[in-house]
Image (cartoon, rainbow, N blue to C red):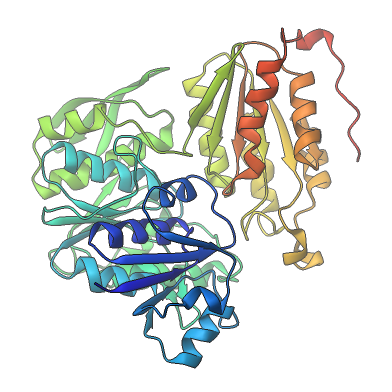
Length: 479
């Protein structure tokens, strides 16, 4: 039995790979700087030796193979020890290909936005249809409670990541998987730390498209001029989807707090379906999955049953609790488009309720000023916005950092009730003093955000009653 060590194990992809390796019978150990939800919680259930911090001592006893995550530079203490001691090593995509994809038909979901939801939905519909797919996804599905599965069926669903592979392979992860089918949800400029221009990012997606064979169907979002341009010349079966035009569309769309009823349309067919997911973006994700499942030969009933029983994903519009009428939501959104789409979905799911959005700039892109104007537009649908301080601002050059007080001030000028507040305790006090019953608080961050969701629920529990926010004054915020 091989001992495999994962350096950077708590990343969304690495944590899922760890689960697959355990299911396959390998001895697994791993290290990371911290173990926050949802991946940290999942890892702690797997009987894995977990070590906090990176240290050459973590490689004792000597593992047979080390998988080095892209969070690690060549100066990482464990990476240096691997190179100095001649320990065999590989990247996450290499490990996935070597151990799990060789005898499978990979279905790869790629795109700047929506790929976690889309790949989890695809895996669930195939599972519901009795096809027992394998999957490795960067989020924890609520139907299964995990982000990975070996599977005995032919298909293996992979969330295809455009981020670079490792310090020894600067190409995109999704160029490694040789898909038998796939979905491309969107292409926007992101990961500005490794793609200094949009053209550089386009180059990564072009590499992904070149991995499709002449028998690998691709479902591509039809509302993106850039995707249309990229797929204009192709040697693979290509199908477009969008709400209004393309090979797969939606008609008679009827949203409600419970979800969306619609007609799934292709050719002359009009298939009535229901999805529990809210918002136009999630409806597009559902169209993509239904379209690919149709191309794979699933029946209408199989598609219908899988879609209507899908419960969603942890950290994607996940309701963490309801206290005294206040609903607390956790979401992974951090790119401006994801922020806008999340707000749209929450307003649709909670019609007529006041929505307070608390945003932590934590990702490499969101901590930079590159997409400043896009953030101004993204928050416009919220009733109140709180911008937290940058996570580890010292990691970003001063001249590149997002100016959060300026962002809040510019949002105010646009008519949005916005505040820049540093510190979890100050944010919580500000929210609690100004909140009333029947309101929604959504925390948006790609990290654990200091467990602020649970801290808010705890504070609300301790209050005997909630104040009438119309009769309270806001606390003074330092500008």
